[in-house]
Amino acid sequence: MSYDHVLLPSGVASTPEEVDAYLTTQQGRPETDIVAELAGELNVRNAELPESDSFLSVSPLGGAPTGAVLQVPSPYDAIGFVRDLLFELATPRGYAVYDPQLTWLIDPAGHVPVTVTHGGAGEFPYLTEALAASWVRELADPNPYLIVERAPEVYIQTYRESAEDYTVEFRDGSPDRHFTARITGSDAVAGLIWDWARQDRARLDRLHWERLEL
Image (cartoon, rainbow, N blue to C red):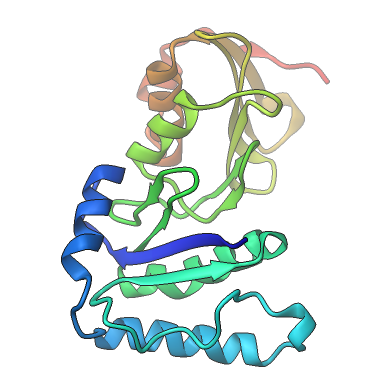
């Protein structure tokens, strides 16, 4: 069984339903130059590894009539490696990464380049307003946390305590610049995280923060 990622142009869809509709429109269309380029690079990277370390379940990729879409199936133990590689290749080319298993569309449009650690799904190289909203809203046990980091010891993070209650922390480098607050509602938390990622402190500065003593 493989774990699939799908590459598609940024901006052509904003929901899983729109992704499915777009994929249907591409069936039977000639492969685009960008898709051929992406497939070729993935094939080259995969060929550089021993066969036992292959990160593709189907090789070679490409050459199919899928238009502007490229499906990338991989073994489950290669999910993190493949995801990192897809962002490396797709983002500069204006391509989004869709995860049909999680129904997550990770589109670089309007993104901020930060390191995002999602407690249930690993690490991602950027954040958007839509991703902040969906990721915070969907945080669930056993690891209901999200961390957004701009530099070492410069980050904001949240932990979901209950259906509506979240602990939010941010740190501005030194230990004496580490603060915490309890926030109600996923939208409020996501908004604070997105503001922080864009370095907009207006809403954060209006809240009462307690210094966190470790």
